[in-house]
Length: 231
Image (cartoon, rainbow, N blue to C red):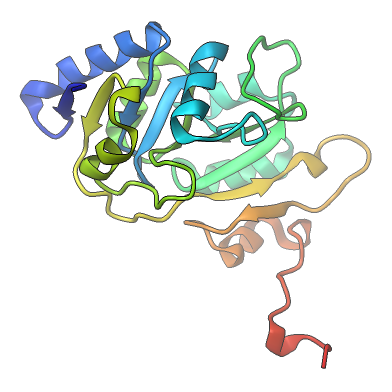
């Protein structure tokens, strides 16, 4: 059985950070608390570790994991460009439940899967997660569950689904929100052929809140069936 360490216990906090850092350094997987749901994490720059993450969840390379970062400066090192509207989004919603897809920095040597030259980045609003990210660097993190199952909101659910595929389980208690991050595609703000920002997944940050920052740069809201002209 993989060790389970309680991040809320002051006596276990430093051992938890140490064991998690060591596991990541060996190319292994950990489960960690975040501000949205529990995540399964791997070194973003270790291709075999990322492949192990996808296999543990039962996903293929066509579903690359997002990357958690400790702050905007790390994001800027991972992406090719940060358009001014994205800077405003980061200032408003980070740390928090907004994942932003941008063109990846082409000089980076990593393999997250079939990303088509992009990377999805987020800064979590969780003190333990941020401290761990400061020590490990960017982590490829996906929700701690098997594909098709609900994301884990407490550690026992993650253990039941992922079992020995994980080297270290970090217990932060029941996740307060339990709402996955909103994912937006902001790649259309980079380059000559400008396109609106699109919402790939609705989540913790509402479209209304996004529109307060982006205005017409955000795609139109979807039309509900009642508002459709269809008969």
